[in-house]
Amino acid sequence: MSDTLGPLMERNLHEVFGQPDSARRAVAIAEIYAANCTFFEAGERIVGRDALNAKIERILQDAPGFVFGATGSAEVNHDLGRLRWQLGPAGAPPLVTGMDVAIFEYGRIRALYTFLDKPASD
Image (cartoon, rainbow, N blue to C red; front, side, top):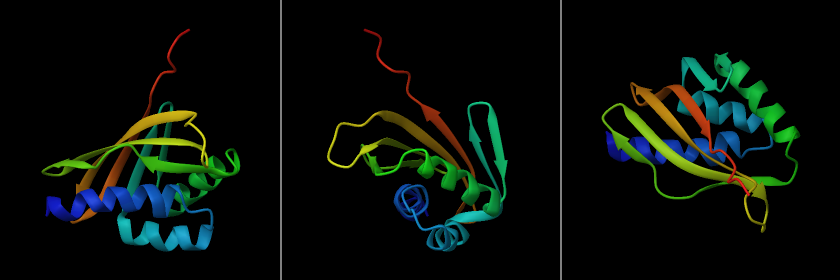
């Protein structure tokens, strides 16, 4: 099954976090996430598909014209996966980099933990 979970994480990056259309994003969330999913970001816990969609809507509104891109392939170990990513204006160097760690259940993401990289100090 791990051969399907890595691509699932990559779909999540592009079809969920990178999808500006809320209705299309909701369809992808229903395919990729468990109904009782939880999204963890530093200091924040989002529960459920609708709340996840609303959170991503806020993220994308705060970064108009920005695009997500994977910085490598997703790696999966049993029911745990990780994917490094970047975010920034299209065609420009990324402004944010990070990593998602997913816990899978029955072929879907049950929990997603997002880690933002600390900026390099001058």
